[in-house]
Length: 122
Image (cartoon, rainbow, N blue to C red; front, side):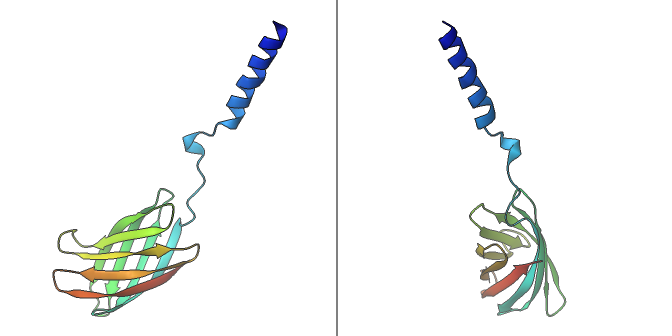
C-alpha cells in the first residue's frame, strides 16, 4: 500500500513540473521593430512592430510621401501578411520572415499594381 501511495505522489509531482502553462510561452522570434523598402509599380519604405503574439502594426510611406497604415499578422513559422488601407481596396503584403530578414510580394488588385518588398529586424 505504501508503494502505491509513493508512486502516486511521484507521478503527481512529475505532472506538476512537466506540464507547461500556456502563459509560459516564449516570446516570438519575430517580436520587435522591422523596417525595409518596397518597389515595383510604386516604391517606398515601411516600418512595423510585431508583438509577442504576432500582431503587425506600422506604416508604409511611398516615394510620393503618401503614408499608409499597415496591419496584419505573423505566424510562428514566419508567414507574414499585412494590409495597407482596407482589405477590399488596399494593398496586401505577403511573404516570409526569418530570424532577422523579411521578404515577399505586394499587390493592389484595384489599381493593378504589384511589386516586391524586403527588410530587416532592428
